[in-house]
Image (cartoon, rainbow, N blue to C red):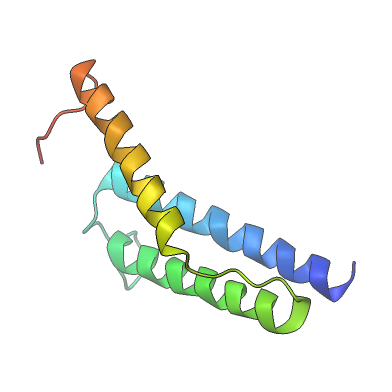
Length: 98
């Protein structure tokens, strides 16, 4: 494994850890503190998010893979999510409760 492959592996790992923490919020709640842990699930998600950002920086600095914020892509994705969120609401699968 070379350095680029290693950093890509770390990026993948951080994506998965953030996803796992998000599922913990859905399963146990945002404020739940896992036994033996000092932080609640929201705080831990924030830690994972920052770990992910660090892995993005390392990819750019050391592997020549620069990921950057593109406002037009973000706007397009937000519109798409909102469109399908409304569709889910119309299908009775999404509620606006809590």
